[in-house]
Length: 118
Image (cartoon, rainbow, N blue to C red):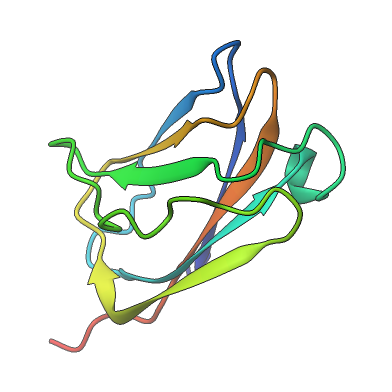
């Protein structure tokens, strides 16, 4: 059995951006939801980002697979976006955070569903 959750911790640079490439090795699985949580390790209190920061999840060709729906994230609470229907994992993904502020932190939690029906 594989883990159905991928947690991506990020910390922004001096201009407020972060980029983390992930190979979640779940090709054939589907993204059921994506949760963004501000703060160091998602604690919602330490080094929280600037309100309205943006997250994109790009495929290997630079396309935002979440279609801009992870823009304007909260700096105080976790927010979850449910993918309906679940979105197939296309391969290597890159989580990009922008507008978070200098040396801010948070997590992006990607939840996967069951194997697709063949």
